[in-house]
Amino acid sequence: MGAMEIILIVFFAWIVLNLTAVFAFWILKTRVNLQGELVKGHREIWMYYHDNYDALKDIFDNDKKEPLTEKQHMFLVMLFNHMELAYNMKKI
Image (cartoon, rainbow, N blue to C red; front, side, top):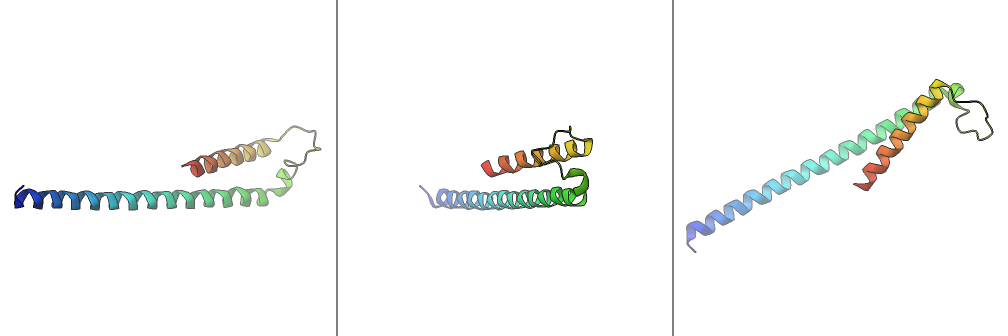
């Protein structure tokens, strides 16, 4: 093996290592951003619940016999979608 071949192998190995580092950094940055968005969504859901407490307070009452209102149904859909997203993100 000549000197030129060794230089080329080292050069390409250096390029591959640098690209791997860049992609690893990009993946970690993306995961951190997604987790931040998840926390933001969690906060927004519970702020919505707090702001609309009078309309939503009966959702978690087991003794309630009346059907859900549209606002309660919408909140539960948002809550379950958020829970599914959090579960799927935890699996990754």
